[in-house]
Image 1 (cartoon, rainbow, N blue to C red):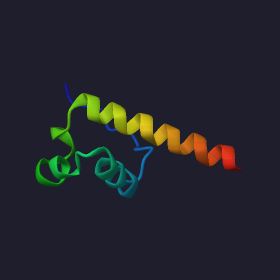
Image 2 (image 1 turned 180 degrees about the vertical axis):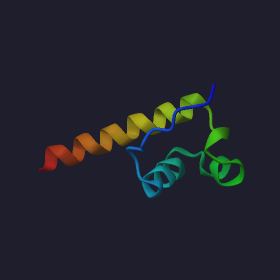
Image 3 (image 1 turned 90 degrees about the vertical axis):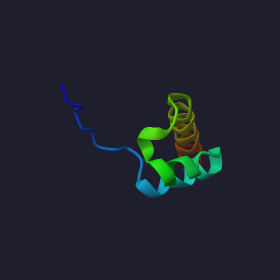
Length: 59
């Protein structure tokens, strides 16, 4: 059964920026997004949520 493709709520630019900040950009650059650990993906989502909350609080 194939995966269902969902719209990404993060831009590619933001994802790469977060990967750099969280220390797994080299893995993404060399092997692609499928090579990151589930923990890294979760950390990336947590950080994106934090950034969104901070941006919303400033408005």
